[in-house]
Structure formats: structure tokens, C-alpha cells
Length: 118
Length: 116
Image (cartoon, rainbow over all chains, first blue to last red; front, side):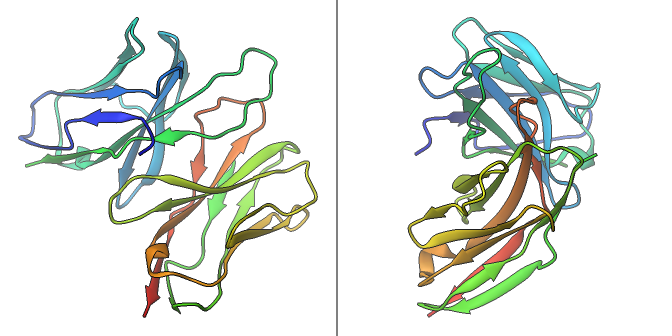
């Protein structure tokens, strides 16, 4: 058990709909990351938040958005869903060691949310 | 842009034998981290081993060890005394030192099957 909790584990919805995926990081971790894993694209970094603020952005579509709340949990919102959005969405967290300090690089992953768009 | 290549989509090994998974990467950076993550059927991504590029000594974690060849940009994973529980997808990943901590760049993965 990594300590990172993601809900829901499975989600089936229709094209054009909107869903929200939720992530609770490990206790004490300030950084949250979202990844998408699909068969054709592999594992791709979407976005990172640190202590409530967006820190880095990867291959995240404009239809997708995320936020991190004061209690450090994060939500990934996916809207106007398309068939190609079907994927496993991972949340990960880590301890952020502060500006100028080398990070260890280790991320702790949740079990993922499996999204199926029909 | 950095890329990570795993040239073996699938591999199999007999229980108790040794297997080596290959990974090459491309970067112009000098300082970075390399990782092997394991994804069993349960789907969770689990860190197997980590290597800092500035360290010449190869990392080891129990039955898992790496062969890090910085000049060749190669980072292979050796699993000794393979166990049935090692059956999983294995992903090689790269991260710039000091860069965005979340921006792990993953290879496409190698599906390892350990046979009894």
C-alpha cells in the first residue's frame, strides 16, 4: 500500500460527459502528480501541483483540468469526453524537499482510476 | 527531448532463473535519475530501483540490480532468482535532476512472465 488513495477505481461514462477523479496523497506529501496510461500512448505526465499551486504541466488536454485543495487532496476533471480518453489515470505523490534541494525522484503511485468512455 | 526506449515488449523466464530487461535513453543532460518501476496485474506502479547518474556504482536492491552505462545511455535491469511474483510490466523511466519532479518519462514497458 503506497498510501496514495484514488477514487473511483472504475468509471464508465458516455462521450460528451464530464467526470472528476479524486486523489488523496500520502500523509505529509505536498506534491501531487497526474499521469495517464493508455495502450497507444503509454504513461504520460499530465500535471503537477505543489501545496495548492500548479507546478508543471505536461501533455494535458485543454478539456482536462486539475486542482489541489488546502487539505492537499487533488481532483482531475475531464470534460467533453471522447472515446480516446479511455485510460488508466494515476495519481502520485512525493515529498518536496524544497527549492534548491535535490529531490530523490521517487513518486508513490495510487492504484489508478480506470475510465471507460463508451 | 528526452526519450526512453525498451526494445523488448515481452519476455519470459523460468522460476529461479535470471533475466535482464533492456532500456536505453536519450538525453543531452548530464545529471538525471533513472528508475525501474513494476506494474503487476493489480495495476499499482511500484518503484523497483533507482540510479543517480552521477554515481558510478550500480544500484542494487536484493534480487534486483542494474547495469548503468552512462556513455552508452543504457540502463538494464537484472532480476536474479526470479519468482512468480515478479510477473508484471516493467517500466524504465528518466527524470532530469532538479527538473520538474513529476516529469518522469517512461518507456513503453516490458511484460515479464515468470513460469513455474
